[in-house]
Image (tube, rainbow, N blue to C red; front, side, top):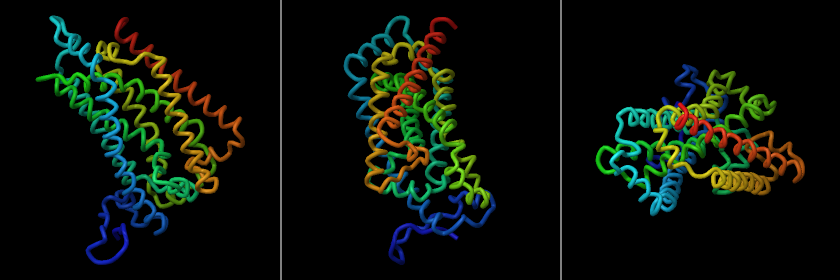
Length: 318
């Protein structure tokens, strides 16, 4: 049976089609319970609403940070007698693959991922910014918007290149590779073997929903897609030219990590000590939290440095 969102009766109810539910795709007609089904329907609607905010935020960031001098500098190199890059059908095809991959991950995150456990739901609902705690979903959203911008930028090179859009699409892979790598590392080390996380997944696994496979896909899929885009699809010389310097990237990583963990702590206070990720509530005291935050920033900075090294090798050695 289809699940309903919203209250009231008659025409005011929007019924979710049966085929959107993963148990239908697996041939299993039962979700673990009706409560889990309703909770997931609510999360579906909320997750979908975040996409326009990410689109607007990244558009404003791109046009404000990569216009002006950066845009004019890149356009002069593209218009030179020996341009730094030209239109490429292969790069357009690669950008299209990234868009399709990101859309698929977005679809899985919104429509197929099971609802969080009870403490996770309380943490997410503590304020209107609760969905920012869903780290995998946020990374997928950022990747989706960047891949769309990248496809448009590559297509623009066939006629009139859009300088600020090209500069942003070739500067963003460093941040995407660092964040997707950090997400994959955190999942592999701290989440996938967590006892409470496995207990949360157990009823979904009994219903043959493929919940474990979905979690692996959402946490490791963005990593594979980001590095494939950076080292296979993107032009090496354009990457080397447009990448921000390492220390600016490290400062951005430090800022974003502090914002995310501040949100986690704020929602924990508002929800009575609940966290979306079970391992977080086992950190007792400010010293453990600061140590964990320092480790996260160090890992992301190291991954970012590794990315810069690979780009240098690809551009100037290979």
